[in-house]
Length: 346
Image (cartoon, rainbow, N blue to C red):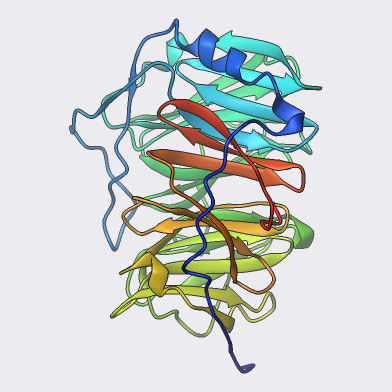
């Protein structure tokens, strides 16, 4: 196994950002539209060994809350309140109501964009039954609705397929299929999943201690890494072709970059700034976005190449991040915030 590099973290850097990126100057319109809708609720709990299961916790959210944001400089999708909005060329092009979601207490609405198939999915995670709504990415015309008895923890979309992480493993909802099918060999992968588009595959992990990692190419049997990783309650993201994983170690947070061929750790980023654990919440163009394991903040932008912290922001109640070289958007309970990137690669 290649020798690991130790990368120091810039723990003292805190930059308060604000404003909107140039490519989304009118996003405030989305928040205004969303404010006219009702309330949604969610809960971010889970266990160390299996995917999150439904909860009856009554943690209500305001209608203006942004649950998720996905996209880049040319087009962006925002899931806010009970609306899905498509933003392009600095304006809200389409916005549709999602009242039919029937979001239950404890659910987490998420987005999964499939650029190849030109669709966007709204996935109601942490609910039983789970529900997936497919839309045309440009027109926001609804294509189909699928329900599934297993609760879903996360989702990624690629080339017409919607891949779902659940408590029965990773499942594939194929084009025109009525139900997802669990992928053989991924029954133990009950943790987060990430798309590795440069290599046309998925990266999947479990939530145990230590953590197992799998690579899956559609149409082939998954490949499990030989070595396990020394943490639990893990998370994963891919940025600029680099795979980052992290979680709760025996004594402190663990944040590591994996070799794309062997899936073994090749670089170790200093993660003491995150306390007992880390939660990787997104991968951007050349950066990875990380929160402390309890998701309390601050939000950190780390280099996908080196693992060094480039910028940090103290922001409340972060749900999701999307970024590219032009800027970054953060979905929060108060709506969507734009971050000013100075050292962060986006």
